[in-house]
Amino acid sequence: MYSKGLRPLAAASVVSLAAALALVFFYAPNDADQGFIQKIFYLHVPLAIVSLCGFIAGGVMAIGYLRSRDGSWDMRSYVAIHLSLVLAVGVLVTGAIWAKGSWGHWWVWDEPTLVSFLIVFLLYCCYQPLRFSIEDPERQARYAAVFAIVAGAFVPLNFAAVRLAQAFSHPRVLTTTGGNMPGEMRLAFYVSLAAMALLFVTLWKLELASKHAKLELKRLRRRLEADLEAEGAAPAVAAPGPSTAAVPAQPMGG
Amino acid sequence: MPALPLDEAGKYVAAAYIVFVTLVVLYVAIMAAKVSRIEREVESLHDLLDERRR
Image (cartoon, rainbow over all chains, first blue to last red; front, side, top):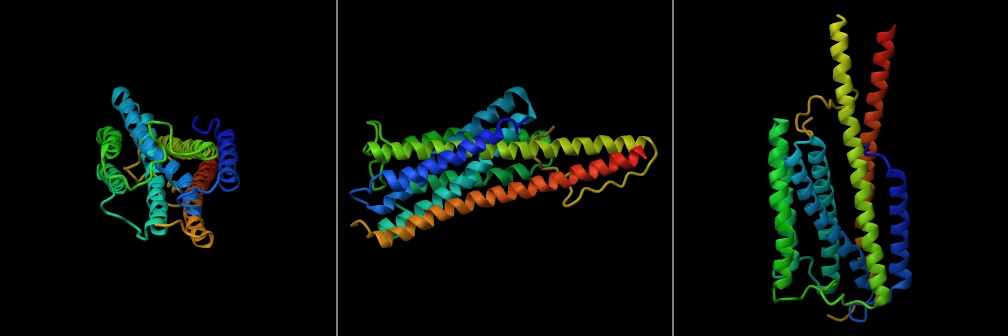
């Protein structure tokens, strides 16, 4: 179900990432102010945008779960947040690398954009411990959905608050007037953004497909074991590797 | 601060892109490990079915 269209999506991701890299390094000119180090922004900013959108999407999918009580929405929400968290690590590290090169410091605590992103990151770091501290799958999914919705609503609010803040030392890539970039840079940036979004969707679908297959396997194994038990044969079916049946905290209740 | 010279900035740019590639590769490797575990489970289910038929 989830693996449908994964191959063309993966191919599109690879092609767009390669195109983005080519545009960034061979087409877009060096920034007049920052020089070559500005190339980090073609990676850092799309990562940040896609990661924040992923958090919001996780909240929207959680609404889908609360409305329908369909476990697949919970699984979608979980995977979107999980993947966004991985990308957020990339945002923090690439941002710190840029800050070291440009400002001479790995981190600046009085910069609202950095601190607000860190707050969002730390907020979502609580998602998994919260989720996996609840054993009952139904309650787990419900609490996780509520968290995802509240935190998802916090993301745009946080973003707007930072934009309204007066102290701007963090460079603005996108503004309401269309951006601070000339045409070549803007093209490279938008291609990078599209490539990052495609990569996100591909990895999201890949993880969903893997989780779905695992759940289906678990169901099949249970059915088979029940059939064998009914026939009077001692099954003694042990899954190779770590047991999946013994893990109560799998996303998606049923 | 003035713009860094190319040889200096290049290190930072390379580091940032390497971090990104490492993250993606790690993620894909973890997913591949999960898929191979699922494949092993499928095989064990096949064995179980064969056993049952006999």
